[in-house]
Image (cartoon, rainbow, N blue to C red):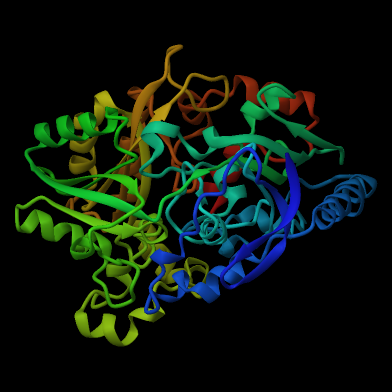
Length: 510
């Protein structure tokens, strides 16, 4: 039986939300993993602030009605001359670029950033599109639950992860973020409200992911949750030799006993493969609270196992594991604050990092922006696991950026924009490159286009937050647009929203 009950927590009582007590016992609270010296994003006070964003359902309904009546239908009454887009400023998004279309399209304010309800019987959480991963982890881990796929950075929003995509080290089991979503609620181009699931409005349910807000405005999503444990038991395994790296990484990714799998490749022939599982208890002498402000950046800590050529095991608090790359923005912060991992800096000022990506974008001048564009790479390319060796070799030849992030994910068959070539699920890997290219002949457009062609040729995909230099035909060669274009016509989107390519291509961003 589901009842509306306040959440009880050591730091207070949260607003009403749906919980299920009788059929699904509530897992234990995870407060034992919170340390009094943890950095600000993991403090109990911050957890309380973030978790208390649960809002009565009426507030969500009122905001949806406002979007329908005052904004979308108002746009239609005025003639609907311009395309619509969300009113969220471009500098607030977790991407290095700002969309030019924000200045020419009709901005529709979607100020919806709350967690609406947690149903532990159905094992789903219902959230608004601007709720971010920091909020979600603060609430769910405090009551013994978590998302099966919880993308890394605190500021990533549910809306961005639905309309774009999201991945984590548990994706080799659960797939991308879209694959743990069970329902989307949208306001369409005519102002109508629709809910879509696998069974209800199924075509729209499959077409929404990767559509970047060009089929409607997301106003809520229902996402699966699973019971959580207090700790992650993480195993570090240094591997040398490209063939050995690819073989060991593929073996770990196919082993479903591993809850988490991740690789960091430091050179063409050296990497550390990490495998993890949740644990209720930790061996005291192996605990590493990596979220403490004075701790080394995670990728530098991992590199220590490679330098020592020695495997190891640690226990990390669950929420700190989820956000292990947040403090150093993976390894981007070493280019912004070169001394940021120095022991003195970490002890005295480590609590101040990371700077908000939105702040960096807001204060970035045109000259710095052009320098970043020509001398810096931020790309995530998704390729079949069987092509991992050739992908790493191609990255090395075209850009030579290290470290590389390796994250496996299961891609099930489907009919949306992203699915395997055949009718069976396939194991893919996200190859993430973030940093300064070391190849002598690097040229942003030409080098990225060579990577894009390689990814198309192996039936891979490029994450849409990054700089995309493909032309329209090349883009739709990479992505399956059949269902997407069909729904664009059926839902009268063609005069209301730009096509997805026109929102994400290089010409549309600066």
